[in-house]
Image 1: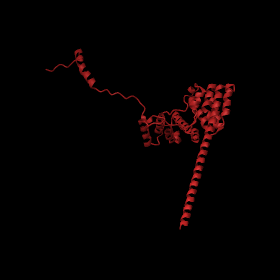
Image 2: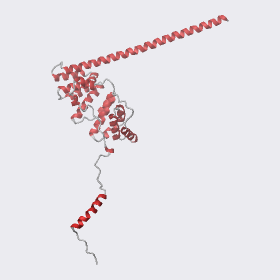
Image 3: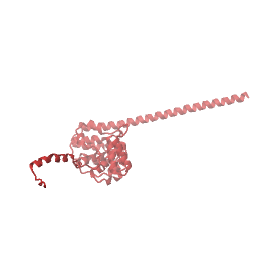
Image 4: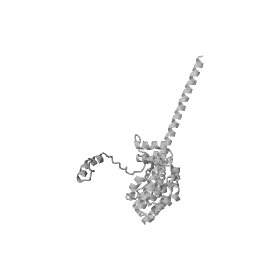
Length: 308
C-alpha cells in the first residue's frame, strides 16, 4: 500500500528546523567589498603655500618674521634612506616617467619626509604638462608647490616662470596664498611695480593686524625690489600713525637685515684679501728659495772650475 502524501504540519516544520539551520551554517555568505577609490586614480593634494595664514596673523610680528623670513635656502631633512612607501612611488615613476599622477604623488611623499629638493626635481618633470591635470585644485597645488620650492632654493627666474603659468584661484584662502607668493616672487626678481601691486592686493580690505603680518612675511623680498618703503607707507596709512610699534619693528628688522648683508660682504672681502696675501707671501718665499738654490748651484760650478 502506498503511503499517504505528507501534509504540512506543525510537527513537520519543527522537525525540519535543525536541517535548515545546518544548511544555512554551511553556506558561505558573500558580501560586496566596501567601495574604495582605485589606487591608480588617487591624486594626493600637495600642501599649499601659507595655507594657514589666518593663524599666522594671530602671532606676534617678531615671531612671524622669525618663522617666515628666509635668509638661506631650504634645507632637506637628513635621513638614512627614504621610506618603503616612498620607494614604491619612486619605482612607479621610474616605470612610467610621464605619468603626472605618479609624479605628483611621489613629490607628496618626498615632502612628507622633508626631502624638498627631491620633490622639486620630480615636480619639474611635470611643470610644462601641468595643464593636462583636469582637477583645478590639484593643478593649482601642483604649480604652487613648484613655484614655492623654486623660490625657496633661490631659483627666482624659474619661480617667476612657473608663477606665470598659475591661474589665479577663485577660492579666497587659495587666493591669499597666491598673492603672498606672487608678492615675494615678483619682488625677488626686482620688479618693484608688480611686487607692490600684489602686496596691495594682499592687504586690500584687511584689518591692520593682517596687513602688518603680510608686511612681516614679505619684508625681505620687498626690500630687495626697493618696494619696502612704499609698502610700509601703505600700512602706516592704514594704521593712521607713523610710529606704530609693529611697523617700527618690521622697519628695524629690514634695516638690520641690510646691515647683516653688509657685514657678511665685508667679511667675505676680508677673507679673500687674506687668501691673496697668503698666496703672495708663498710666492715670495718660493722665489727666495729658487734664488738661493740657483746661487748655490752657480757657486758650486765656480768652485769646480777653479779646482780644475
